[in-house]
Figure 1 (spheres, rainbow, N blue to C red):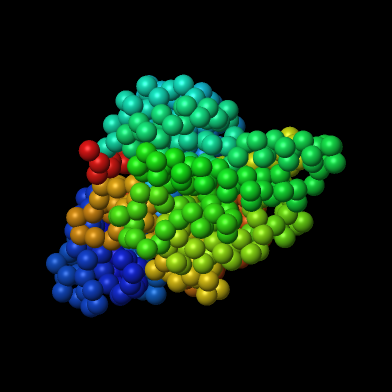
Figure 2: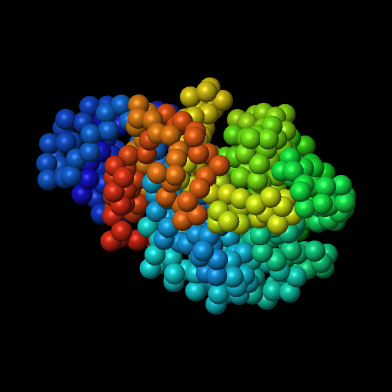
Length: 450
């Protein structure tokens, strides 16, 4: 049993001083203000004094690539779940473009078994969609699986769904939420051909948002929204990167009433195309990081409710793969889970967001949008998944403190003025002041769906 005293608790749109009592896997009691009476009732507890610190619901990262099975030279579930825990992430949902691609229920269950043995935090996995696996999609039990991942533009892996008949069936028959990667492949191929002819293998990094341009994103996202409207599908469009795409979404409804929702990622709120000059291929990702105008519009979309969730699209690659001179051979993606919450808190420090919005978009809304059972909030009776953040302890991202298996980050050299000091998962203190408790493991997420 734990008691966390005198924290600034961030939850459901407010910040208040209080104390949280953890009994077993769950939050037993939340006390606002003075805790002298409740503390005397729990004298046998392990006590953590969180004075001047924030206590926030654990981040639920709905969009990660932990690379297991098949690509474990880049990352694996153990290494990346450790990094996530150190960053205040308590649950993840992982993508199907591992090797083999997760296109069958049996392969999906194999990943769950790996996570049960290796993950320090809670987990779920998407079943991938392909042009010919609708029968497997139909077998998904909505209460047990976070969703169906649909690549409407090719990315890492070979899971492009480009057959109109298959797309129609997937949207019409999916038993649960579809999370869609939207980039128009025909536009990307045309742009790729142009820039190969112009630059050859020495193409610079700054062409990336010209190859995977605004039109490629918008055309594909608009097509996905059109299909979802036609078939009444629950659609979540992932990693929105452009201002233009925001016009496809609605902020006039509450989240629980939306059928079509949007995600952006931390890097689209942090970087712009000006950063290619300094960081080059380190920030090559799909969709591409776009203009300063897009970045500012996305921040506005977060605040206005056009964007519902903020994830990472954590996608590590080995140094020797990423640090190359050939644009066309450099894979897209980079690691983020250890630093995502702290990067968003930097944006709070810079008055772009407030901390309540960050918690809403990274914890509350993912829990509501995916209908996760008993997580995402600081509530009595909910699982004790939360992090303690010290706003007076800064770190500088460096190779010495990076926990990703790949050993690098595009954020190296960045000063972060907050530090995650403790992370609780299912009532277990899995991370405390740099020390991990690897004797406990996370749980498979469950969903309030029929």
